[in-house]
Image (cartoon, rainbow, N blue to C red):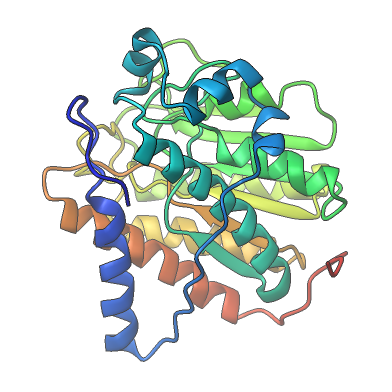
Length: 304
């Protein structure tokens, strides 16, 4: 957590509320939840994806106002420290998934951050940074990023464009932010108001094809809950049950092929942050349950 900035509209409250909900649901259900505190992502890996000058602006907490306006809040020293740790958290979740089949970062999923600036409440793009590091260090050869946030993963698509060892799949509300879309490896723009059945029909047709044709050895999943019907910034019409069906399907499709999968929190917005936090927590617990249904064997896992 970081103190809420004095400027900007983004509410940081949901992150500690997510953890409160996870612990509470875990106690109620008797499910064991193991928590890890990540180390900050080393500067060299942030600069491998983002412009070094921009990384330096963030580290010094001296991001120009025009970039802060694109981000949606000022980058204070506390925020600068926070985003380094959330980026480290996505990489740590990937390493843990390689041991356990599935792991979650209870923050991050900052898929709008671009090469030389942040955008859309995102400072550094943890999905792109962690993907690049996993491949560079030999932990993965081919990475699939499944982005089912209601908003297109434009930053991730832009930062990883042209790489044959990364596939970016974004299924999002076509008329939602960002207005100008980037080009993912595969983009599925959904019509406003699509419901559980329509969403799952499209996902069940597309995702297995991508997994079989691209043949990744690792999957990152941007598991935003903002496709929910009650989300303040969404335009889709998924129910609580629809989100759980979506998340379970993604994990089943990955783990059924022996692939480790790590999720990042992604978007979720509403006037009652506690409700949003519970929505995220249910999402992660549903994925953990789906993972337990599969043998703990990881295809091509390299210890290290």
